[in-house]
Image (tube, rainbow, N blue to C red; front, top):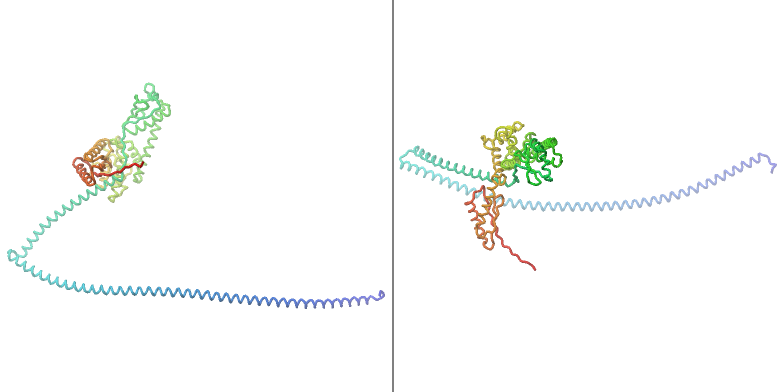
Amino acid sequence: MSEWPVWVWVLIAICAVIIGLAAGLGSARLLDRLRLTSARSQVQEIADSARKEADNILKEAELKAKDEVFRRREDFNKELEEGRNKHREQERRLEKREDTIDQREKELSKKERAYEQHERKLKERRHELEKKHDEVETLRGEHLQKLLELSGLKRDEAEQRLLKRLETELSNEAAARIQKHEEMLHATAEEKARKILSLALQRYAADHTTDTTVSSVDIPSDDMKGRIIGREGRNIRTFEKCTGVDVIVDDTPGVVIVSAFDQVRRETARLALAKLIQDGRIHPSRIEEVVNETTQEMEKHILECGRAAVQEANVGPMHEKLVQLLGRLKFRTSYSQNVLQHSLEVAHLCGMMADELGLDSRIARRCGLLHDVGKAADHEMEGGHPKIGAELAKRHGETNKEVLHAIIGHHDDVTVDHVYTVLVAAADAISASRPGARRDTLEKYVKRLEELEAVASGFPGIEHAYAIQAGREVRVIADAGRINDADAVKVCHDIARAIEEQLNYPGEIKVTVVRETRAVEFAR
């Protein structure tokens, strides 16, 4: 075989390659057929699965469609039933309305028939009245003619005499009516004024304190008195010279007295002396320094008091100088009554009375607050405090005519032209005469209360009597064993009559008799 030529080997190789290719082609075709068969079977399976899924989807869709149709049919039936119910309800309402309308028509027809019958009767009565009127006129003419014939007067003369007589009678009646009306107006006005004043008094009840002309300063020990006096009295002389007060150092233990009628100076001296005692350094230069410092503090305190008063009275903005003058009124007294407290009380009373009368309460309060502002400078200017106060208020920016007139006219020094001046005068009198407000009326007030209690206690069967409400009421405690309910009513009446006869008092006094029975037992 090794002896074969090359071309044989090549031919053999070519044949082998051809055979290999043929075998490969055959196997490839076989594989392709196998793959095609497998693909066809898969396609058939997929198609069958798709048909099954499509059938399932179609069945589900049919079921859903049937359910939706059934649900919509139920909704439609429900809506249809609701519409039928509403329709039936509307029909029932319409039937009720028709019945109501029919009933109203029947009532209207009845009223129309009654009205026609009433109108017919009225026409008949009017006809009868007209007929009677004609008869009366005929009789009147006949009587008038007979009267003229009997009196011998002409018609004009008779009418003139009759008219003159009627005029005289009417003038007398008019005068009587006018007098009666004036009396009623006077009584009504007096009652209204009393009511306004009583309401103002009840709504505003201020505390009153009386100021004295001396102040006491506590000292830690009596050795301090010698330091206050100083060597040969130089400390006390310097202090009195700087403050303008009198310092009284006596045997009273633990106290030094500061005396002055000017309360600003007295309060300044009291505060300065208290500072010196607390500091312990008491000599002329230190005294002058502390007094000057205290004076400045006092000026600030006065301004703060004025601002507090303006704010409390609620009178609006005010010039600072007027505010300072109001603050100085805190250290000014009139019959031992604090003037600033009195001014605030007058302001509140004026505002309350103005509210009752329908006036401007702020203007009224402003008038009341400033009515005594002249007392803060009456020792520096000539004239009475109303005139001084009006000049100061006008000088420091007060332009309201009602306020200026109230300041100058609250003591009837000028002709009263404004209603606010009357309110200020009334409130000023009330504040000054209020029980306990001034020293000169306190004893009279206490005496009147004692007399009131004595009159009530003088009746038999009365255990106690107490004057309350500033003497406007007396509370009487009766002995339940000696006085029954009927006797209590009689005793109450008798006490009221006795008070009217024996005592003099403003306004009215309420008498209350209290009778009670108490049962007391002990559980043992």
